[in-house]
Image (cartoon, rainbow, N blue to C red; front, side, top):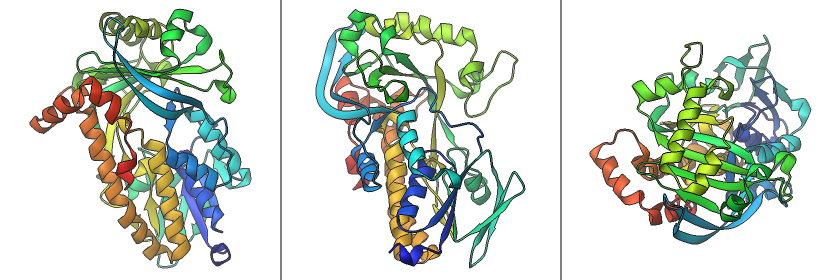
Length: 406
């Protein structure tokens, strides 16, 4: 099959997870692939820990990428009440890794000479025979297909669907990666080897271990990934959180160094009032947190002639289903398989038919799980909030993802 595709070329916009996965899957089927990433410096996950779902591990192995030592193997989940007592626990084997670790594996597997950093897409046009992309450095590239893998702010999607924008979900996540050595020994014993939760009313605090810098899995050298979901009304609280010291209000997100110190102090003070003592100690260590407003994005289409959008350029689901990277991986695999079997335009339509409904199911599922965290709720959302805000639901339902891909 590789020989049949050896003269076909793909241009991928976006050099993060989705773009690298698509590029590697297409190269494995004989395509010539160039990836264009608008950011000049090497990408960073900025404090993101992720669950390595079985689909992701399978995709890596299928690409010939070794998965030994991918992350920390965890077997159990626990929920603590506000006094620090265990109120619920289940067995849940998972591999917990860091964004940087998975990105580095993919980045190293893709040929450096075909990965263009610091080059953004300005626009494109397509014909029945090719797609021509125009870039910020004045260059152009003609290819058989163009793949938009450029995330929630996708330039490709904006040209195709200019009226489609992310929808704020009504809450934010405070995130941090804390060095294992910084955690007091007593707190470490109670928290570090588990995925732990605490559920203040209408909120969710969780943490779990991931590899340290440079994939260091040695005890004492790992990190603890922390996420705290908190409601924030869009026009007041969110705007305030996204406004930096100079008075500039950022859209979508704010760079971590620009978060006002008073907001970080208020977050820590809230932890002293609301979460288990073990997690209070963790919150005190969140010196340089990331503020992540939570959004939904749901595209009505993924195929546009010779152009496709995948990953977060097409669907952004709330994090509770842990589907971000697995969705990107499955999109890339389905896209490459379809293109290996047919000409570009019909292949992309086949890809869309397979993945569009799955993306919608993931979005819907994530909305249900996160409804109780929203600053405001409709009557339907209140019903979902009542169902999924219990300790048993939080600890069990967020572990289920496989059925969404069925």
